[in-house]
Picture 1 (spheres, rainbow, N blue to C red):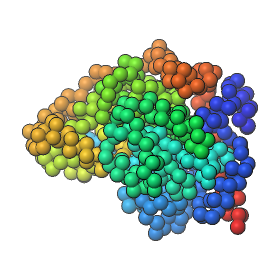
Picture 2: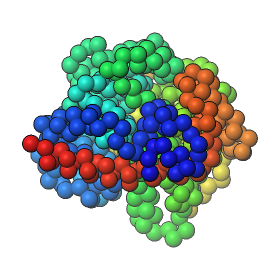
Picture 3: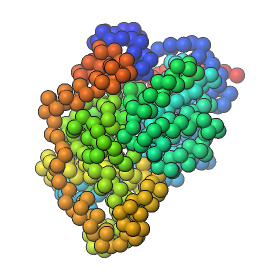
Picture 4: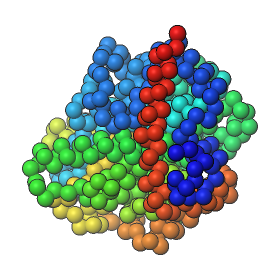
Length: 513
């Protein structure tokens, strides 16, 4: 299939838009650029993993990463860009996860959380999204690491992942993110970038995505800058569909076997939308198990619920627009969660008073409490949404809900200091712990949720028109094509095509002297 074969997508779509804006080239676009990348990768001994290998790491030789520091800027760490790592970077047979008990969640349904802070270099799963966007651009000759800068617009983790992947692929990476994000994000970027100008701070915080777009639109005027816009780069969606979806499936089947419940079903997957990459894994689960997909957002900026306004602090989940790669018409439930909940539960989970309260007063197993340090803000948000979903849908003990901890609490100490000072006068006690638990876990309600009808889906879908057609120049035919599930189903043929191209690319690299 060639990019100009519109009939292959059953659509008469703009081929240029598919190739350039959406990242859906599946043939070599620029042979000279590709040859340049081959020579560069040969010189630096860079080998690319296939999407199939990242989805099934048992296919990867363990010798590749033997003796390699998981957080080093080493090309061999590309073979760790998957879910099957432990905290030390060792391969595991099932992705690390926790099954949250009723003593913590208040619901009979098991809630399973898969941990993303096992990913290398950035301790967050966004490094997978960055690889999924960059690799197809390299193997099709669209991005030349020798002559172009890779620009990564983000509210933090995707930019960090992009800088990491760029560096180990021998390219210069540029992070574009709001100035108000957590200090830990900037500290990491300071260590990984060689030039301070490669960190571009835009106005605002998590809610100011348009300002990021504006900065990138200005940078795009220089052909040396290549914008990897995670909100419309379909490699982001396809990477999560293939790699994250497969990992979630492995976790669910492992849990189901362990619980020995023959009637156990994977009822729902909850994911904050953000760039809408991660929620693409929900399409995989729905295809395989009929799982309902729950899109989550911040209550303080209810874009899907209320068309977008306000500001919030659930860092990493974006808002005020509908990403182009969000399969809105396949979404079943919308849920909003308050940043007051994520801020305060972060304190509960990461202070001795909070942890002691959970063990001693709520009888949450110590082993579960020990895992709570691996829940970042969006992870807590995803978990609360799972509780809300269990209640909304009336789920029981034979209904599993699954979600993702995209990063861990280690990225938010500076934010925790702010919350401690602002809300608890720098003294979080067991009384405070009891109040936080009661407000945010003990009395979770089904408010600010939509059990979507077709009209709801179309309303949310249409909201994306203003961003993509009017502001970003996406052809209307491309925008509208996404309303049909056939568009998304046909997209998935790119993964085996890209894998074949990666294999061929690696062979050319190996043959280059």
